[in-house]
Length: 258
Image (cartoon, rainbow, N blue to C red; front, side):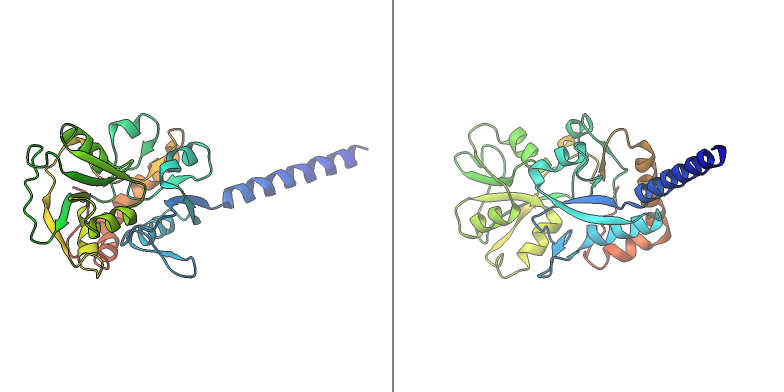
C-alpha cells in the first residue's frame, strides 16, 4: 500500500511539474491593434505581421529567451484586453502618459517621435488656436495627439475624432477636414505615398508634457519581473547596435528614445 501511495504521489508530482512546464512555455501574447500602422506594424495578405515594432519586439523576446505571439485586439480596447489577460504586453506605439500609468505599468521608452500637422499642398494655415478658429482638425481618438488637440484647441476649433488613422487620412485627402495631427514618422511615410501626394507637412507640434517621454511597452502593474526583463532587453539592444540596425530598415532619422 505504501509503495502504491508513493507511486501515486510521484505521478502526481510529475504531472504537476509537466503542467507547470507547459504553463512556463506558453508564449507571451503581444497585443497590437488589428488596424495596421505602417511602418510600425504591417500586415500582409497572408495575415503575417511585420514592421519596426514587430521586428523589435521579436528581437526583444529573443534577448529575453521568451517565445512571443502577436495577438490582434481593437485599439480602443487594448488596455482592457491587457487587464483582462487576453494579452500580456501592449507593443503598439502607446505613449507613456500619467493617465495611463494610473492603470498600467510601462517599460522604459523604446522609441520617440514628434507629432506633425498635415494639410493640403499650398494651403496657408496658421496653426495657433486663433488661426484655426472655425476650421476642422482631425485626429485619431485615444491617442496623445488627441489629448494635445483637446488641450490646445478646445475653444473655437472643430475637432473631429477618428477610430483609425486610415479613416483620418482618407478624410484629409478628400478635403473634408482642414488639417490633421499624427505621428511625424507615420506622416512622412503617408506623404510619400500616392494617397498623400496632394498633402504636405505644416510643421511639428510644439513639445508638450501631454505627449509624455516616449513610447513604451504596456504591462500589468503586478508583472514586475516582466517589466524588468523588458527594461533590461531594451537597454541591451540600444547599447549593442541591434536597435540601430532595426530602425535603419524603416526610418531615415533616429527614433531612439531621448
